[in-house]
Image 1: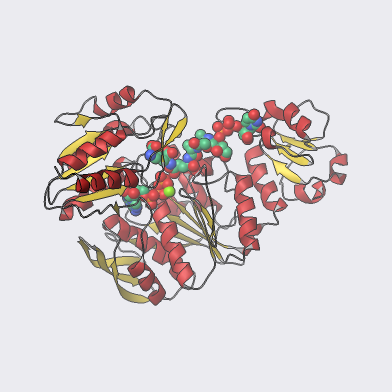
Image 2 (image 1 turned 90 degrees about the vertical axis):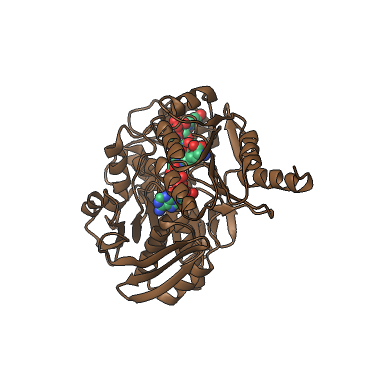
Length: 491
Ligand SMILES: CC(=O)N[C@H]1[C@@H](OP(=O)(O)OP(=O)(O)OC[C@H]2O[C@@H](n3ccc(=O)[nH]c3=O)[C@H](O)[C@@H]2O)O[C@H](CO)[C@@H](O)[C@@H]1O[C@H](C)C(=O)N[C@@H](C)C(=O)N[C@H](CCC(=O)O)C(=O)O
Ligand SMILES: Nc1ncnc2c1ncn2[C@@H]1O[C@H](COP(=O)(O)OP(=O)(O)OP(=O)(O)O)[C@@H](O)[C@H]1O
Ligand SMILES: N[C@H](CCC[C@H](N)C(=O)O)C(=O)O
Ligand SMILES: [Mg+2]
């Protein structure tokens, strides 16, 4: 592609006039993966500064460089104020502005993003559309899936996925937008049609300096909605009105607003809701009518997720009946309130709760219908928000009858330090079993008929990361193995 065309979308840059005649065959943000003919963009990261790798990129064949400061090299340099935003715009231009042709829905908030994207995927498929999903579990384009490193990919990979989606004739793409991604401009080049806010509670205070910073990052999705893109198309901000942070999100957008909630008056509401052992029952009240829902998804938090998904579907023209049948047939999401059943007389649930709020929600939901004791196995991730550790441990103590603390991706941290952070000011009795498999085994062996064991924190994950190495580990698989061996050797 001609540099002249590529640079057209950058609002401001400095380069010698000869740059316009140059052509590049690709874009790279990693010197190690640079291909001959690429435009190399220097990103200042957390670990490294891309400006340092210009010589390597040029050696690999980079034809030009985008940087924030002058760099010495034998190829032309384009200076911009912010290379992360420039990378997003250049990638979008290079791939032909793919999001302009997609119906694009972005979901942000602390909890519920993955669940909502999968609900929307089911709804739009039932609406006979081809769908794309980008998020924590994987990237899915039609029937094809791709493994992911991040919940929200870097700007270059993201635009490449959208390009593939357009080629695969995807109608609607649904994606999770993390606060890290918003802060790092990964979604800057995206033309969202709908932005959804789920809720905001404590997480990621290792990355964001305080809760307000975290909120500000999340609200960027709404500030971006419709800015500079396809002004002819309606854009919608769909916001959980019951969240104390809702006013801040509402204030950050000038687009059309649709609220949802259970407590306060909202455009989309759940009335007469009931939480049962089999799921949830409620009347979905919307501006286009009412419909009774009976869904296998458990807990009040999942009613919120369904309301958010219903809001996005309705504004996209999906009939209420399609929404109802999708919720009714929903298979749920891997590792989200997933029951492991091997004929045992007690419940075992695997859930991705790894924040104080999600852990509390899941344990409260379990308490609603547990006839015996609520047992929890939970840990806190290493190299992540330390301040959520005592909060998660306290939630476990408050909401469960029997508590076993264990490891959950200690990464480069010493498990003993993580346990210390969790239990420092804790009162009451609990066990600490570092080996996660042993901890799950202990909880399952202690369980009596009517009890429910919650294995929290890892959900769909298939690894335990220790010292930077990922060892295969799957909570559902481990629980199933233990339950099967108990069947074979009854105690
Ligand atoms: C802390 C964080 O957000 N890190 C992300 C960040 O990496 P980084 O800033 O450390 O990058 P870096 O290693 O410093 O490198 C800077 C630049 O130099 C380049 N480089 C580097 C080395 C080299 O030899 N040559 C070279 O060119 C790199 O390609 C890069 O362009 O940018 C990378 C590319 O976008 C991300 O993959 C990476 O995510 C890491 C893996 C990560 O774990 N992030 C987590 C915290 C995260 O982002 N989580 C959210 C979800 C959270 C949630 O919702 O629960 C997510 O969206 O995944
Ligand atoms: N709306 C919600 N409110 C509070 N907790 C929720 C909600 N939805 C799901 N949860 C809880 O949070 C956990 C994670 O849910 P989900 O994966 O949908 O969230 P997420 O926002 O994608 O998380 P992540 O940021 O880690 O990708 C679930 O396993 C459940 O325990
Ligand atoms: N996206 C989250 C996932 C946390 C999952 C939990 N199992 C952990 O490792 O802490 C993070 O990277 O902070
Ligand atoms: Mg997610």
